[in-house]
Image 1 (tube, one colour):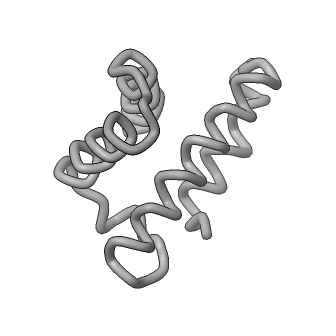
Image 2: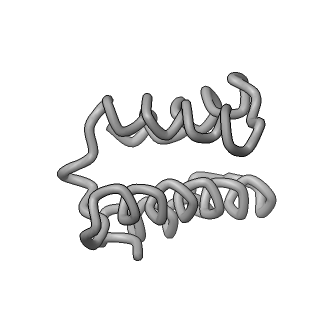
Length: 84
């Protein structure tokens, strides 16, 4: 499911001092995103192929289908931009 870069990022969270609850939340968000991406593109997740359009499309899906608030989604986007 996760590619090597994502796994490395997840392993870095404890070292970065992230709380256990934050680690679980980040893992859950990334799992949901990767699953969605694989469903949309019908291929294994590849972080090098993820674009801004994917984040925008996933944001819409989460807002419409899951009722996620924009703040929750922006938190996910911010967390993941910290690694770039």
